[in-house]
Image (cartoon, rainbow, N blue to C red; front, top):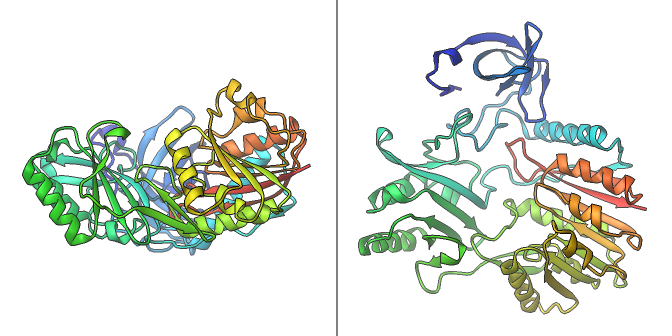
Length: 440
């Protein structure tokens, strides 16, 4: 496990350290002369040789160089780029250890931010560990010193793009073709002006949006078309904002996925959950926690393209979905039409703006589903009146803001945390989601 920490000699300091704990970011914790050191790639119980990466007034950040005394819980990373690529940070931990660590982090954050203890800790929701990632943004750069175009996630502790040959967590239809994609982009006349690829895959289709800063030549179009047909990849081109995106080939396969017998269509740049196996289990869990009945009126805030709204409505409840992005609201309405669901409506509102939040009529709403972005839903909980609401189910991609918002639900709106559990949406990373159920 070799670090590429910078050339600055002040950072080339190596030292031995015993690891006594694990941080919320999944880094080993040790002490040197009383000062805390977070060691990337180290586990509790280990003694390691580490290299100083960043020095701060209250703590230092280091990276493992050699394992001197190894933990029995350490496993061999699957990916050759582990330790350099910033896409994964926990491949040295088993699945069981990762889940245990993430659950402890969630409960510690709840205790710290809200002083809430759930009545029930549900079993972690986990599924595919490799090749699970169906959505990704990959950096691209033409680096002559590395032989041409490189594609990958950012390196740890740096802004450089990892010189990747493969990616074990990406859908294999893309992750195993990194070298081929590098060769393709390098052959384009605009190879120095392609900064990003956006990947979106489904069971039946692979889409890659190529962001380009200069016009393509006729030969570029020809090479992309030929590669796409050979490897079953639908290329999209993006020269500016989202409205500039178009499919390279006419008749490109639509992107759709299925959850709870509902088929959902989306565009390559729409927000969708990156782990489809976990998403299916999550939707089922949400419907169970909501205890959906036909008499219910359920408000789905931050509804996206209807990932939760439509399966819930299919159970007979009346559902209203609210989302800021008007294009996604249009998509949600189309998904409702295609699935012949008439008891679900959608509206575009800014749920971070007080006037929009106050315009919501929730007088008949008895249950609410929240699935906000990483920033959480502090504004909603500050402005909305939940007196008629009996149950809130909260899906979060950031346990820190979840814990903060749990405190608001408890103190401002008098809800108790009934149940909470971890969603392993991002195996081998320190990121995780959670789902909680709040009741009067």
